[in-house]
Length: 106
Image (cartoon, rainbow, N blue to C red; front, side, top):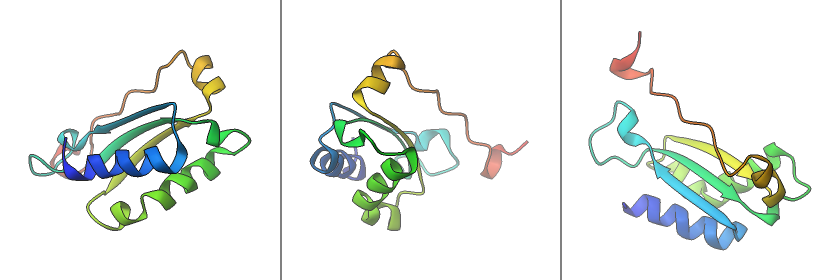
């Protein structure tokens, strides 16, 4: 786990008190140098999201991670759920697609 991933975990843990938090570095799926920390998939299940629309949840996360987004983080795939929504999803999130940018364009 790299320093950016660690910082994302620390900030989201203190920022939204998640019941479940998964931070996956998906940079290896993109046209970036090995060891990069630029593309992340983040799954956050928090009661803080109760009564908030999806866009409001994402705005919360963007605000918490503003420094990272202004720095090395190029892409952030967010999956934000309330605890009840997470149960309805059977604890599953969509798979991330492979990168189609850079040298992988078809």
